[in-house]
Length: 263
Image 1 (cartoon, rainbow, N blue to C red):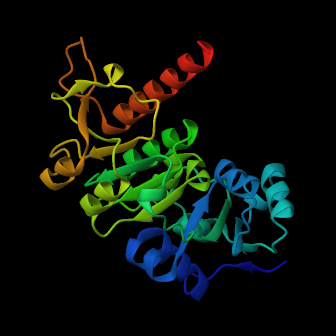
Image 2 (tube, rainbow, N blue to C red; image 1 turned 180 degrees about the vertical axis):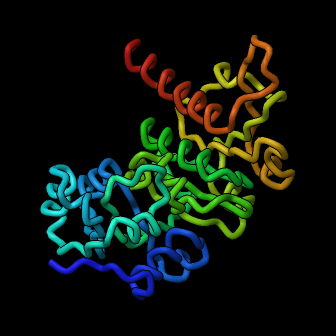
């Protein structure tokens, strides 16, 4: 087994750029996923990596060796210091994979339920929202201008595998896509609107979340059917956008569950 040890290796340079540069990910249509849990989740959905990448010491771990065998792809082995060059983790587990970003374009008008994201710049928040969407069965994600790249290492890590259960598409005109979704779009606001638990959410819903500072833009809000807020009896002025999204998704799931329990 040969081990790559040179910092000038072209493949290592390409992987480092893929990890660091969203423009490169878009250009290639590729992303890097890292860590045992993410790769398990990817393989568990039937995904096939383009390249498996292991560190020299990581390949000696039982869980890493198991994933390499499961993938059925001969790994590219890097000296530990070189692996850290492509890793975004503080303590790399020694396993990564180069994958194709799915072509997940969808028609909002035909979506059974969608999340529209606008201007959310923190990749951790993007990933956490995607994790919650997957957990509560919201399949479609449309992200617009100003959003962090959902396929960045930070967003993937926060998503905990949720990405692989979703259709995630960039929207060139978010307001138009919200309007195309039709009735049932709900714009979230920190202080104004109907309490989310007072809205009937048992039908088709398109959630709209904006940045924590600026909120949803005027054009996106105008395209929505209604505006919702979360009741907050405590002292905090507002909630983190990812926490707000999780509460909204849970409230819809609760209403659907209550309807089912009541016959």
